[in-house]
Structure formats: structure tokens, C-alpha cells
Length: 130
Image 1 (cartoon, helix red, strand yellow):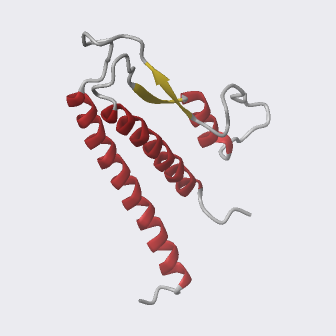
Image 2 (cartoon, rainbow, N blue to C red):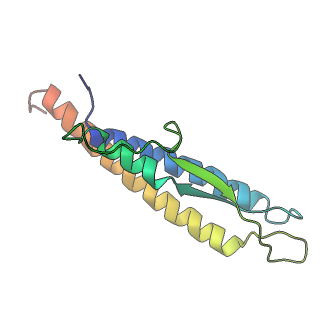
């Protein structure tokens, strides 16, 4: 028996993705002046995310499984190899700050949705009374 719905699990994965992305962006910003530093970028492993999402919705045992990817990490951190400045660094501070703002909006949206789910559960537990 599952205590929480798959939507809460999907929100949890999204929050984990946002946290990992925030860590990578923060690292990029902190090393903006470090010679030969290469920026890190977080990308989702689409096959694994899709498999996890559809796993509970499989209607027939003959349907194909997605077997590639690490089930514990549906997203990965990659390092780009190009460089933009004379010291070998490829961090663009304007892009990083823009990515940080976008990621914060994404994170707060997920938190708001998760809060709504828990408010609904709390309302059900209380029997609809305030």
C-alpha cells in the first residue's frame, strides 16, 4: 500500500533535481574567476524519469521496460569543455544568475504544489473540518 500518490513522488523528484541544479549553479558562480574551471550543468535522464513516471501506470506485462540509467539518480551533472575567457574559464555570470533565478521559480512552484497536496491530505484527515 502506498501512502502517497505518484504526484507527490514526482514532486519530490523535481525538488531533488532543483536542489542538484542549484548546487551546480552555485558552484559555477563561486568559481567564476577560477582559471581553467569548466561550468557544470545538470540534465535529466529522460528515459529514467519516464520509466519512473510510467512504472505505476503499466497496464500490460508485455509492455517494454526502460532498463538503462541509474534508478537512484534520474539526472546527471556534466561538465562542458569549451572556454570563453583567456584563462580557460567558461562560466558566464549573467547566464548563471539567470539560470539561478529560473531554478528558484521552479523550486518554489514545486514547493507550492507539494504544500497544496499536503493541505488536501490534512483536510481529509480532519474530515473536512477546519
